[in-house]
Image 1: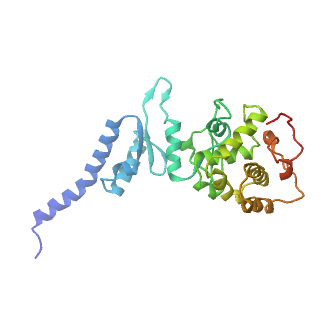
Image 2 (image 1 turned 60 degrees about the vertical axis):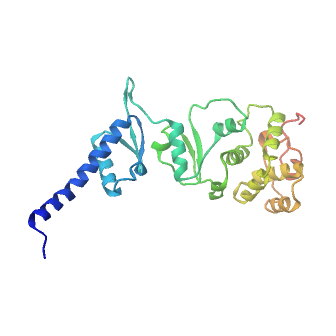
Image 3 (image 1 turned 135 degrees about the vertical axis):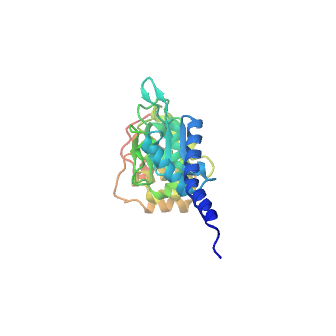
Length: 261
């Protein structure tokens, strides 16, 4: 038995009105929320497809800006034009979708080697790229960091970045730089975590870790693995870390600094 025609008409009207109601709800939330980031998951109480369509429509209307897949920004007008998202918040958001770590001056600041504020942000990622709108148009992005970095903390990854650069961004003296590196890597479990991903690091980083591990009296098995990974005929530029104890033993080039540790 078929339902009455008027019942079918009402059901059809309700069904067609539902997307309009969802679109209106999404618009109201965004307008009331003011300047902020919006993600699809912020509307998880509403049907996904209808929300996605509503956000696309609002983007076309210019009410919001699409920063990356599923991420939008509601700007406000300022004397200098449209406002921009907070870079720190954006980078935290980027970390939720892939591994993003401080690099360069940002890494040196995090580790206490520098107090200098970089003119441009600098990050590293294990991916091939990051959405420019998520990290900022002026941010320097170092891609292709090993996937193994995903298991590291920001500070652990920053240390590897610092070692990769031979400590050149340190504002401390060579001796103070060496001492601080040793202090940081001597923290419980850190040497072991860094050695755990050392196979994906450049040879000179493995050599530096070997010199530090020897100084700290780390297990012979870990040091043996590091040693075996190095070409015995190569010499490595330790940069500002040339004064590491046991540096020569770990194939460092002739020290550039004579300052005592």
